[in-house]
Length: 262
Image 1 (cartoon, rainbow, N blue to C red):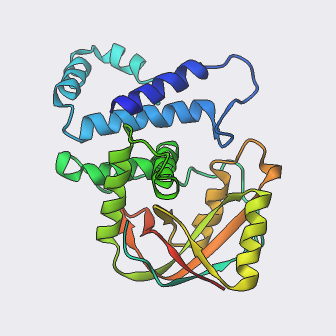
Image 2 (cartoon, rainbow, N blue to C red; image 1 turned 180 degrees about the horizontal axis):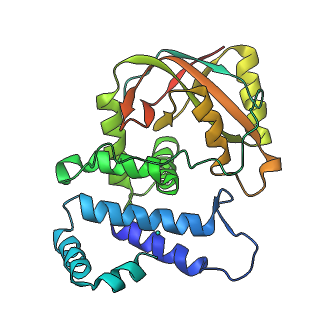
């Protein structure tokens, strides 16, 4: 938790609540204040649900219970198996017009609480999905270990990324179709078009999460929109015959997704 606390502190200091109207972005992808809130939510969820910080969680609960009703109201004023799937890739085409006020597709209805240290892997995955800033941090560390092991050094996120990876590898079983969406740069688009033209294999390291319906995947393109979205191309992946597992009734997850692009 120390690495996550330090990350949140550094981000809060770098991007204090801004008084000017211009949006600031974190990693060119997330509005800075959204990123700060996502990390704060991740920390709170892991500390209160994991069972690893019982004394701190109990103190917070006691403090809340001791508040007067009026004060309470004021305070409330926010490495696995290789798959044999085929991905039907349609870069940038057929994107439906959506309202900019579309709901956050990462919303999580608490279908499962993942309470207690025995379910800590599920709690980490829950937060990687609900708070994609945290998910991106874990992904970056997993990819660094996978593709640049000589220069990789263990840190506070290494164990968390490994635990989530192991959970995904263990749980995927049923083959099904699902959709993924996102933004890619011009260089990645060129590489993707080469893969499509050659009908060759594509590989996604660590794990990926997608949606059960095409409409949900398209809606997800509005959250988050990158800082300079005109420099990116929207892509939609239709994945079939992939080993997956449904997670918390809100995502379809695959571990080390790879297969033929058609």
